[in-house]
Image 1: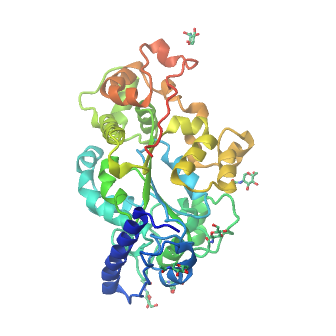
Image 2: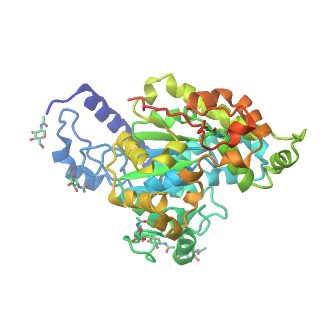
Image 3: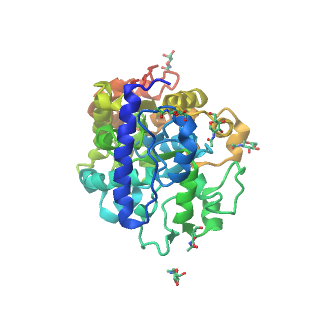
Length: 422
Ligand SMILES: *[C@@H]1O[C@H](CO)[C@@H](O)[C@H](O)[C@H]1NC(C)=O
Ligand SMILES: *[C@@H]1O[C@H](CO)[C@@H](O)[C@H](O)[C@H]1NC(C)=O
Ligand SMILES: *[C@@H]1O[C@H](CO)[C@@H](O)[C@H](O)[C@H]1NC(C)=O
Ligand SMILES: *[C@@H]1O[C@H](CO)[C@@H](O)[C@H](O)[C@H]1NC(C)=O
Ligand SMILES: *[C@@H]1O[C@H](CO)[C@@H](O)[C@H](O)[C@H]1NC(C)=O
Ligand SMILES: *[C@@H]1O[C@H](CO)[C@@H](O)[C@H](O)[C@H]1NC(C)=O
């Protein structure tokens, strides 16, 4: 086989990466020597067996088979943008180790008592720590997470991992024996009850057994903040950014976070905007998304093949097709179980809807535009003004009158394709 210059560079980087891992590992635990494949020989697939067997503690670079580099996934989203649903599209895959919002622990440790507006201003403080944690998690180093969990885990076990039950891998063997690997639907609460203490050593084992790590987060402001990770060749990270109509996000937050969004409800009920309304609750969303879109549309070299923008509304309207597109972009084979889960949990099957009460169902296709009935025209009008550019870029039309707003036979979502930058 011919060695391309890319492969040679890749192998060069691999040996640097291995040395770096060696240095890091040396300080904490006995280090196993990893045979580095010769950069003059590209037929890795034949040489991979010994390489693999010795390099279990260096799992992220070459895949088990050696034929492909392991791909990792980050779902970059905003609170109430449908990210739980998007996360499930990976959580349901048997070769994916999925974590639901691990950065919660970073925020909880570093900025525990922040109000929403202070959080908006200060969240950049967490970025360094967040990136370090993400990097460790993609390498299946779950012990790294311990320093952020309160109370500090003893003997590498904890019952305080945020939304542990939302991660299938953490409810199944080897981590927990209460459920069978073929169990299609594991209830989050039931997992927490039956699996009790989480053994992080076993969780790391489960992570290493799977080919991909997928992490969902709403705690990274924009794609530019992830550059250091995206550029790290050891991670082979691909980012799926999930966006949603900011008016839909706002309506959903007003219903979900009743205390934090109290003033918006007063505005909606009285028709008068409270003078102390925290406008950043919506402008931050639009500013962040706009920055990401701008970065994406500039096509910087570091994002090539690594960034895909997905509108939540498209995912809700055509879940199977969109999911296939996402899997194609990631270069992951789609699994029957994932398709089945989608059929069971979207409008494709009413029977399924009744049976599987997933939180992820909260906003199915039928109500992707239901925010129009939940917000007053003033609030919508205001949001359209401060978020005008984002709405335009993402193909969400403005409602120009109260009549237009409430007339659901007139969709405000334009057909728009966001081709990944390949
Ligand atoms: C490359 O690997 C193949 C298969 O393992 C082996 O037969 C060959 O001798 C190797 N070539 C070099 C230059 O190492
Ligand atoms: C290796 O790859 C082959 C085909 O590419 C596949 O059939 C096999 O299951 C893979 N083995 C592992 C351990 O992933
Ligand atoms: C941790 O393990 C040690 C040895 O098994 C045990 O003595 C200790 O009580 C454990 N600590 C906690 C907090 O469970
Ligand atoms: C966690 O699992 C590891 C690996 O099986 C085991 O050695 C360890 O004793 C377990 N920890 C506890 C506290 O049970
Ligand atoms: C889908 O629903 C059927 C029928 O309720 C059930 O048997 C199956 O296990 C479900 N599969 C998934 C992946 O949710
Ligand atoms: C709602 O919009 C549709 C499509 O533009 C239009 O045909 C219909 O007359 C509108 N209905 C009302 C009550 O304005």
